Amino acid sequence: MGETYWVYVSIFVLSFANSSMELQTYFFRYAGSVTKNRSMGWALHNAYFTINRAFALAIIFLMALMLDLNTSSTEMAGLCYCAILGAVCANISIAFNEDCVKEKSIEALEIYRSSGSLIKTARKFWMPSNKLLFFRVSVRWFKLTISDKRIFLSALKIHSLYGLSLYLVVFIAANFIEYRATIMQSTAIVNVIATYYLTSVLDPILSRSLDESSNFEMLFKDVLVARYLSYIIICPSVYALFWLIFEV
Image (cartoon, rainbow, N blue to C red; front, side, top):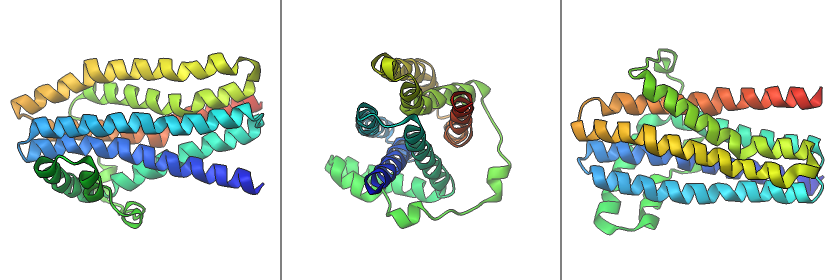
């Protein structure tokens, strides 16, 4: 029981860290726009986003290991729930500390410009856990407006696919254990689809907006709102639906 508890905690922590890192890297695009260092902001965003995708493999590896150790479908459901909960907490935390994260991203980008060190940049940008976990409820989050539906829907689709590919396939594999190798491969397939939409649809629109200096901040906000909705509402809802189907 003790060992299982620590696995649950590890999955939650890894998911929280992974989701926080993925979301916070987007703010380097914002910092590049504000400080007129767009190329540096884009480069730093890509650097940390690549590290983040590699870091996400640690979660999949741990879940796959538990699957090979004949963990029951009920316990795997608990692990997946911990992964979901970590992502939800990370997104809520960033959402209610958005102004602070923006300030940190600008400071971190300046450090990267002068030093070129990803380690020094990370030390400046990633805030202490007590700040990340402190939620500041704001009325503005109940008055959301979408400026570009195409960007919003694209971001919603992309991040929903990313979120579901991280843990839903593991839960399904636990219920069809004899096909677990085949099912686990669908994680990579879903990630490829999401990455295609990200690089061919969403990024070009954001980059064009940056070049034209038009309404980047409004479009950036659309992406953030879509991501929050994906990880806080859509992914947990789809998981709950699958859980009901398999449990029933």
